[in-house]
Length: 364
Image 1 (cartoon, one colour):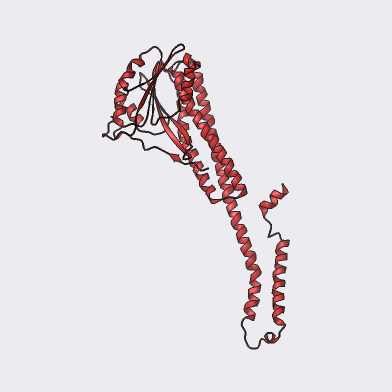
Image 2 (spheres, one colour):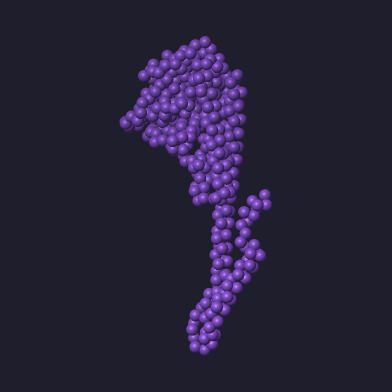
C-alpha cells in the first residue's frame, strides 16, 4: 500500500519576530477546553473566551487548557496576550515546522511535538504539530485541527488514574507518550506494507511496487525528521535544571528517550529493508529482461539458417538445376524442420529453456 505525506494548508505568521499578519478569513471554529483535576476532584468545561482561562492558571489543581481547531493569526495573538506568551512562542505556534523543540522562557517551558496519523479515508500520513506551554501546575496545548488524540489521557483522568496524583509535568509526559504511540502505529503499518511488497515481489513484481517502495522510503525519512529532535528533548528534560520537571517524573522522561532511540533504530531498519526490496525489484526486472532477450535470441538463432535457405532458393536464378526437380521442395522443407528440431534439442540439453527461479522453488 502506498503512503504519501499530507500537510494541511495552515496559516503562518508573515512576520515571525512580532507574530503580526494581515487579516485573513477565518477557517474554522476554535474550541477551548479547560480540564482541572487532582486526586479528589475533576472538572471539564468549554469556554468561549481566552480571558476565562486566566483564573485557572493560579488554581491549586492541575489545569490543562487545550486550544484546537484551525485558526487565523489574529486569534492566536489574542490568546498569546491573554496567557502572557512571548511573541516568539506565538510565531512558533503559527509557523508549523513539524519538528520537535524545547525552549525555556523563565516562567514556563515551550515545546513542540509532531504527531503522525494515518488517514483511513485517503490512506495518507497526516502530520500534526502539537504546541505545549507548561508551567508549575498548568499546561496549554495548541492543535491545528480537532482530533481524538487526547481521548486516552482524558479517560485516565476521569477514572482517577495515576495521572491525577502527579503534577503537570506528568501530564506533559503523557502527551509526549501519546505521540510516541502514534509513531509505533505508523511503523507497524509500514512493516505490514513491507511484507505485502515482499510477497508481491516474489510472485509477480509489478511496476507499481517500485513507486510504493520509493514512497515508503520517503515516509521513513520524514518520520525520522519528526522523531530525531524528540530524542534530544527527552534527553534535555532529564538533565535540565528546572522547577517544572519534578524528580519523580524524571524516570518517565528517560523512558521517552529510550523509546525514541528504539523508534529511530526501527526506522533505520525499515529503510534498510526497503533498500533491499528495491534491489530485489531491480534484480527481478533485470532477470525478466534477460529471460525475454534469451527467448528472442533462441527464436532468432533458429530462424537464421531457415531464412538463409529460404532466401537462397528464393532467388530463382537460371542454372539452379535442383529447382527443376520436383522432390527438392519437400526435401528442403524437411531439412529446415530438421535444423529447427536439432537446434531446439541442443538448447534443451543446455537448459536454456529452464526458469532459474522456478527451479529453485522446486528444489526447496
